[in-house]
Structure formats: C-alpha cells, structure tokens
Image (cartoon, rainbow, N blue to C red):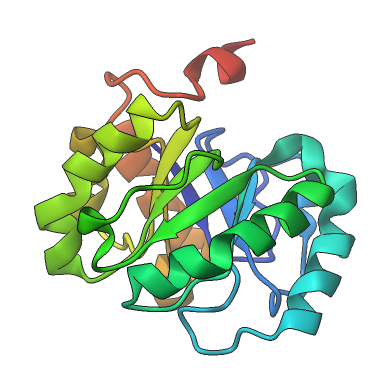
Length: 209
C-alpha cells in the first residue's frame, strides 16, 4: 500500500495510519509529527523559495522527530537533473549529519544520468510527461542500488494514487487538502490509500506491529 503524505500542520487524529505528512521550511505547525505520524520533508525548491539558512534551521527543529522520518529531500534544481546531481553530495552530508534519511530528487534528464549510489530514497519530481515515460525505469534503477523507497510528488487525485501503486511507489504527496479542506480532504485521501490495500507496501509490516 502506498502512504499518502498530506500538506497540513493540523492534527490528523484518527485518520488512517497510511496517511502521513509532508513538511517543509515554510511549514509552521508540526502537530502531526507530535502525534507520531510518519513524515517527510521537501526543501521548497519546487516553489522557488529555497533558502539555505531556512532549510538548515528547519532540519534543526525536526531533530526530535527523526525516528518517524521517511526522508528529507536534498535541495534540487527544477527541470535540471545534472545541476541537481551536482548539488547532491554536499546536501546528502548535511542531511545525514542531522540523522535523517536522504532522498535524491529526480528531475527531467535523470534518465540519461546515473542515480547516486549513496541515497536512501528516490523522489520522482520532474514534469508529468517525463515521469510517465521514465518513472518505471528509474524506480527499477533505484531498487538495484538498494534504495529504501520511492516517493512521487504532486499526486492530487485517486487516479494518480492508483498510478503510484501500479508503479510500486512507497509514498506520494500532494496539496489536495489545501483545496478540499482538512476534514473533507482527509476523507478523500483515506479512500484513495485504502483502495490500494490489496497491494503490499514498505510500511505494512511496520504498521501492523
């Protein structure tokens, strides 16, 4: 089953255990993390708001929640895989020094470049058309390198969640709650993830324990 990471600082209460949270440097509320939810962090590169000082401060404030961290996405350059890979070694060291697993962000062009060996997660970003064409091959490459998991960004519909499940992705995230509201949005997201309950995933054994 694919875990869905929602973008909210609100408490998630009795929501499915397969609903986690995606945070970032500009996210203020960490209530879901206090609740013990699984979480991951973006870096604000996609929004064009990446700031090194803010990102480093963000990593510091997340330290108490490290045991439930899936990954922290290393800073990337939107639409430019080569530039993203150039940045990766430095930021991998920084993120690892804060005791978090590291995700390399795959951007357009990654299909002709080798994924780094020393990463924990593959974060499929890039354009929609590019991900559709090259996502499966990159996921296979990540598996061969021993990556722990695969995450897909910008997933805001049941159809796209089904696509993530079919690809074998372990988690995905989206901003659906910002448009639907927390209460209704959580209900919809829970239906999306529970619809994939027949597909085993990375978290099923841990969540059953």
